[in-house]
Amino acid sequence: MRKLQHKTTEQFMLKLVANATKYAQQRAIIVGEQSFTYQQLLDASENLAQVLLAGQTDLSEKRVAFIVSPGFDYVAVQWAIWRAGGIAVPLCISYPLPSLQYVLEDTQAEIVVADAQYEAFIRPLVAQLQLSFVSLQSKPQATATVALPTLEKNRRAMILYTSGTTNLPKGVVTTHHNLEAQISTLVEAWQWRSTDHILCVLPLHHVHGIINVISCALWSGATCEFLPQFTAEGVLNLFNQGKINVFMAVPTIYFKLIAALESLSDTEQQQHKAVLQAFRLMVSGSAALPVSVMEKWQHLSGHRLLERYGMTEIGMAISNPYTGERKAGYIGQALPGVEVRLVDEHNQVVPTGEAGEIQIKGANVFLEYWNKPEATQKSFTSDGWFKTGDVAVVEEGYYRILGRDSIDIIKSGGYKISALEIEEILRTHPVVADCSVVGVPNEEWGELVAAALIVKEDSFDTQTLHAWLRERMPAYKTPRKYLVVNELPRNAMGKVTKNDLKKLF
Ligand code: MLC
Ligand code: AMP
Image (cartoon, rainbow, N blue to C red; front, side, top):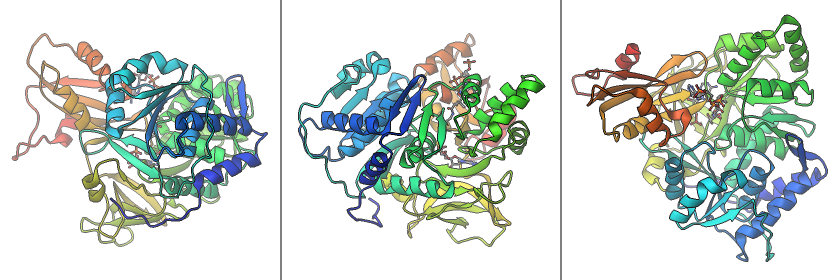
């Protein structure tokens, strides 16, 4: 296990609660016609913390998984788990059951919380795994009240799953101290304020939505409005109400908003532009922002997007400046409190202007991969730098991403997808003799997942295969292109040469 740099008794949760108390009567959350104050959030999370504790004094890092629609209940459950001393494991609401089962088993979750929308779906799995279940539909009320536990800063707080260069996703463990560092650097750098009103359209099982959007907003006394299912029209309608002044999204979302705006008349476009120009901040990240998207967005909205770079393991690390030049095609400079260096294959810092792997140090960096000490150790240098696997260069003081170390990591719609994970599942299909998965460049999605297959039957059809895959993995991971081949391109060692394969698509 990695050695912690900090161990004090100052509490992240106490600060979060103190901030919320300061803004008690202000609106914290809006979903559709409903709105909730910070006081309601404090009350609901305290009640749920007591429900989870059920008379015990501390959940002592028990894993509590929750499948809850984006909105007030999601945040109330998240805060409740933290306040009760548990580890929050947010489940992806679009996962099929086998993917959820993997997360529940891998985290060794003991309690599952579900809202009305997901209760019937998840209950059989909860029963099969013999876990405790808390139904939000039944509006649970605490029967016993205990003093909420005192949490040291290095208490584990959250596990988020990330796909990588192994065939199964890994659980990234962040502590309360990590969360505070990840939030406060952004609050400072992007000048968050209590008058802000942000729209959340992102999924809530990844850092972009969880940290950058909801946690920064609620740390600052701002209002967070949810649009649980993204549509470009839905977003533009909410923008038009004139209250939202901060927005954060992945490049694919800006691409879709641009397409929606471009389909409107000139007059309508001008009306939208007048609204968008009044925003305080618009951020893009999770995948490379194409210069063309940045320029079109500037033309349509009058806004220069702020691009930043992050990762599940580190939160955000590098950002274009809030004030100062936001350079197209660049991710900016190190955020406050985050150390960044570029190194060669021997972990030696490269001279300025040369390409190297991005390595990160700071209180923002995660603690460990859950139950994977070897993977954790491999992802750090002997002197404690986290190895991101992303390659960059510094030009005129700004970092520019050049690519990734591994061809097996695909970024599509801002989601990180492991080619190996998809190949592993494909190989379990009775008709697939062999396969190889790659990401092919695509303007809208960044990359599209593409699978080359060697099949055992001529009558094979990809539609049936696609439906079969959909039962085993979330939609965003499923291949969008299939190609049946007689053989896969291989090198002298017999290894599939994925760069050659990409050319076939
Ligand atoms: C969905 N579709 C895709 C696709 N995903 N097609 C190609 N490639 C993909 N990856 C198709 C669906 O099959 C469907 O088509 C249609 O698009 C709509 O599907 P959907 O599921 O409703 O998609 P939509 O809601 O429009 O999703 C698009 C999106 C979503 C951009 C909103 O992908 C998203 O929320 N991305 C954000 C992911 C994120 O938060 N990443 C951050 C990770 S943290 P059809 O034909 O079936 O109707 C991280 C660190 C950091 O990266 O730095 O932030
Ligand atoms: P995830 O593991 O899902 O958190 O995704 C993290 C990865 O997203 C990083 O390692 C990068 O490869 C990529 N990423 C995040 N932000 C950017 C960006 N602004 N430009 C290019 N890639 C990015």
